[in-house]
Amino acid sequence: MIPLIGYARTDGAEGLVRFQADDVADAAQMGAAQLQEGRPEWAYAALVVDAFLRLPNGRTDALVIEAIDYGPQRRSIKMAVPYRPHASELGFAVYRPKFVGTSGFEEPDYDAIADAFFAGVDSHEQAAAVWNAHLVDESV
Image (cartoon, rainbow, N blue to C red; front, side, top):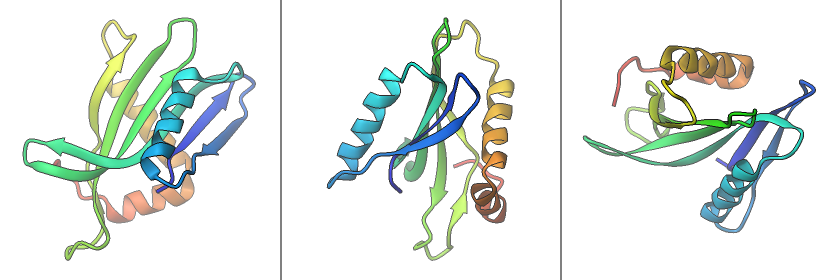
């Protein structure tokens, strides 16, 4: 997957920025730098990168999402969505998302963050269809 940033502007418009380079790690670094810098018109944005997540039971593929609210009190969250690749003998599967970290919150409301995350998933018809068709309701 090509690293990308989805953003919402202060006027309510939304968009995507894709990052391409000869090496996907370089593209991910470009995306991370752009996310941290932001743009004056962005209200909030989220970077999605295909990576590996180290868990107690080993390393797994995951989409790592870092989201930033550029408001007066800048806040950010980092989540990961572990998945089983389509090349696996068991086939493609998506597992429950995991919270990796937060910044700028006194006490993060994880239920509200999860609700916002799933609203974002549901707002993208193609992604929601894949998610719902391949969700394995278990944690890895």
